[in-house]
Structure formats: C-alpha cells, structure tokens
Amino acid sequence: MIVVPDAGPLIYLAGARHLGLLPALYTEVVVSRSVFDEVVVRGAGLPGATEVSEARWLRVEDAPPDPLLLRFLDHGEASAIPLAERLHAALLADDADARRIAAARGLVVVGTLGVLLAAKNRGLIPAVAPIVRQMESLGMYVSDSLRNRVLQLAGEG
Image (cartoon, rainbow, N blue to C red; front, side, top):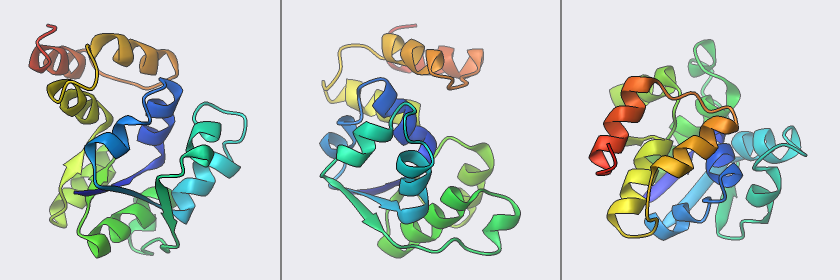
C-alpha cells in the first residue's frame, strides 16, 4: 500500500529516529511538495528536517492544495489529501480535521501511533511506549485516553 504522510508524522517519526518504519511498512511513501517544504525547507534545523531530506526512498510530488480544503486545513494537509486520492493511497495524518475530511472522502487514514502499532505487530520495534514518550518530548500531543488505548492494543497497558 502507498502512504501519503502529512508533516507531523514525518517530523515525529524522524525525531524519534523511526522514520525508517515507513518504507518497512508501506510499498511506497509519497509526499507533496508542500509537506516536504514544510518539513525540510521551512523546518530547517528542526527535528526531522535532515532525516526527511536524506530519505532517498521518499518520493516528492508536486500536488497543489485543494482550494476548498484550504478553508479548513493547512497547505500540507490540503495537498496531501488530493495526492492520496489520486494515488489511491492511505493518508498518514494526526490532525483531527484532516483525518475527518479524508475519511469522509473515502481514504484510509492512519496516524503516527497507528504506524507504531503496525510496526510492533510486524516485529519491527520491541515496544511502543518508549517511542511515544520520545515523540511527546518533541512536542507531539497525545491525550491520556489515546495513549492508554494504544498501549493496551500494543500489549503494554
């Protein structure tokens, strides 16, 4: 399956040194130019920028943002959703509005914590909890209820 990530999951997976889970779990990882620029160009010097810029397995595509989506979402999300639709790909996003809109448009939606669960289920990582803690230390917000649910699903609750 192809996955189209938004900036947040790229930043947090890279910052936690687990960006390589994406090509291990998905047949192809494609980002919009807007998302790439958000992470690598405007995010230069911040967590994830170097890792994403050096990821040779990451395909960057020009994908203009959907003008209607720009009323509700940022440029990255508004370009990732139509790109995922065009490629018949899953959307990797954590933003609630982006996830809701993508699901309403018929896309498969996965979040960063869903990537960690899939990785643990496939034996790619030994535990989810330390990676979640690391991502939270980078600024990722995870509600207590979501963290508890994910850790329970991972057999770590």
